[in-house]
Every structure is written in structure tokens, then in C-alpha cells.
Length: 167
Image (cartoon, rainbow, N blue to C red; front, side, top):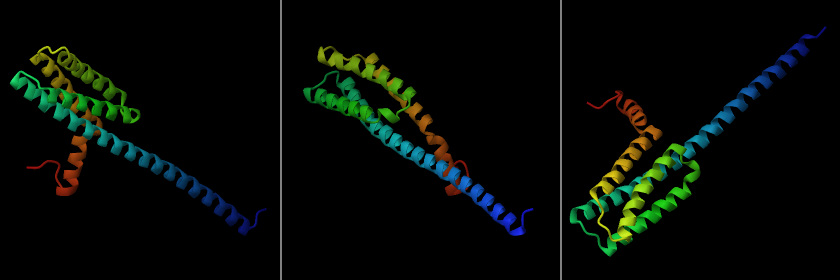
């Protein structure tokens, strides 16, 4: 028969083991949360830089469309923007969701069609620019949905102002 002190030792060892397992589980979960937060931060950085470049390209295309001509300087700026976006995409490829990469590919195809017209010195049609812009706006909405921008904004408003929507 076990003595009372043996029962307490056994209970103490079991409680210590249970607490250690719970602590291990919490640590692993926190580690995953840390990784998740870091990936989210890097995705946000990538999508922000990508959006900046795409807005810049949109502005240049609007200017080209309005004047119906393109200068050598504009061609160089478009090429530089394309190179920058290409490098950005390659740099952040491993943390970009597949659905975003496929939409980026569509955007690059539309941009490539415009670039080919520039190289061949053909006029850029309004349809080419419209196609590019539509894909870009769709991609922007998908990025917002993927990152949960609206949900985060709503939560921030609720925390800051105590109400879900500004009135």
C-alpha cells in the first residue's frame, strides 16, 4: 500500500507533467502565430509595393491614352516599372497564395500585350488599357479580401470607437 507522501509525490509528478504538456502546446501555438503574423506582414509589404507600382503604371497608361502618343521616356519608365514588379513578384513568390499568382499572371499577360504594341510601335488600344485596368482592379479587390482589410478595419473601429461603423 502506498504511503500518503508517495501519493502526493505521484500526484505532483502527474500535475507537473500535465502542466508541462499544456505549456508545450501553448508555446507551439504561439510559435505558429508568430510565423503567421510574420508571413502576413511580408504579404502586406509585397501587396503594398505591388499596388504602388501598378497605380504608377495606371497613371502612365492614362497619360498615354489621353495624348494618344508615347515618348521614349514613357517607354523606359514602363519597362523599369515592369522590371521592378517582376523582381517583387519573384522575391515574394514563396509567400504569395496560388490564387494571387494566377491573377498576377493575367495582369502580366495584359501588360505584355501593351508592351508588344509599344515595341512594334503600334497604337495602344483603349481595349488593351481597359483590360489591364479591369484585371488590376479585380486583383486589388482579391488582395483586400485575402488580407481581410475590411474585417480588420471594422475590428479596429470597434476597438477604437466602440462601434462597428462610423456615422
